[in-house]
Picture (cartoon, one colour):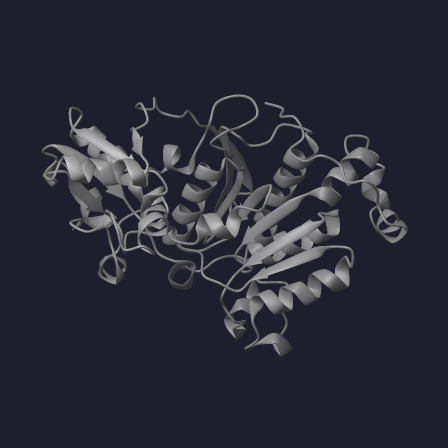
Length: 365
């Protein structure tokens, strides 16, 4: 399915950038207008590693105007087999710093935003909110689901790729596409695999050149979305087998979605608490987050515990679920709604961050 251009065009290209991208300007599908759209685009890249390194370099080479780099690691010698943005002399240096230097050397007109931070459920929306689309090159399930949930909330496309050993997968997830049906990571993989059931690249190994192949494909998907050309991989997944040299396409179909849970604002929740003392507040954050501060009277039920057995959670009366920003609460709400279809379940709009901003400075309910 084709989509309209994701980004409005920039006003102009510099003479140097016009010369640098001359071969791309000759592509009739891109041309002057497409190149101006690329120059105006803001793309966030999660991870500067095996997938992120080629993604960053090809984004810069293609003329994307603003590139955000989200990574909190330093370069290690074992990275150099596949993370082509780095060299031996960079070992020990921050990945965001080195990647920014490589990008500036390749495309001086690019604006680079360095986020030397680890993306979590708590900060994902803040880190990703300023971008037109996100490319996920991360290598942990916790991070992958945090970025996917944040993109779902923000309504921005997530260009997604995964590599392990000689195998890879590539797709585009988008909760609010400009046309067609939504497709989310959780529609395909509802929950992360149990710890220890899927080996990491460090344990199982990975072919470095396959990381480059996948990174290039992700940038191609980003270019198609930005310029409104071709058929992006929304609702489809490419599966690559490097050993056989075969690629196959799997059509993706979103499951039927239950009605969204009703939301209550912090002010409405304060009124509910005053009127209904037996209301149950479920804080699905981690225990250390709960210990640092929560809504008075809330119960701590970490998301991983809830998802392990949602039927065991007592849902008598009115239940209001919250986390820090919202994604974990939505996942908990879905699980509880499936296990307890008749329960009175609600979500706290803006979750604990909104409650804290509304009430904690004054210390009142």
